Length: 214
Image 1 (cartoon, rainbow, N blue to C red):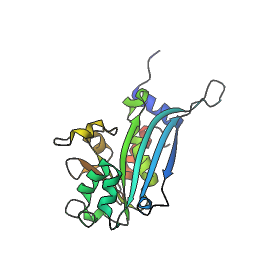
Image 2 (image 1 turned 30 degrees about the horizontal axis):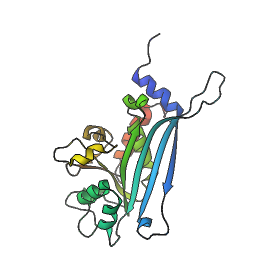
Image 3 (image 1 turned 120 degrees about the vertical axis):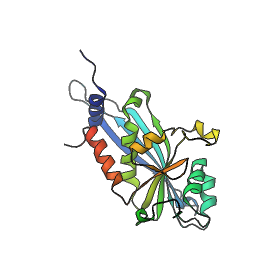
Image 4 (image 1 turned 180 degrees about the horizontal axis):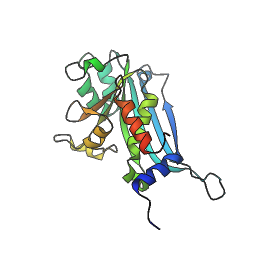
């Protein structure tokens, strides 16, 4: 019996995927209200020989942060949260906490009040060769991106990035992020604009590859 091809494995897994999003937001602290922490998890639920669902198998997990813009202490708020938000702030925001029009596509900055940052990506080893993280990342951005100008991610395969970033879990290469429609803003940060059709186009392609569209 021949082994299934990667494309067949993708389609089989796609039919079994179940995605769940969890949200944490502190209401007591005014600063914390400006930062929404999300985790998005994909599990595989297969059917056994008699049609019963098997226990869910972990596949991939993401962590994302949705940051409202316009806070008077925007820089301090993002710096205090994590090193990644600090790098994203340096790349995307000016000293007043406004999006940097000298680095970003101004025509694509439409209808937003926030930015979404992918801060962690974990894929179970059994599924690491299938690029399931790309599907889940774009599904998560589509799910959580309402009201956001853009989604951003820190990449690690660029010269000059501090060595400490090598310990981060979202060690996706720039090539991988480009395949999802992200484009570089600096050597370390890439973005995808949510007012453009890029997200929908790449998500449609991935959903087709994974057998999720008829």
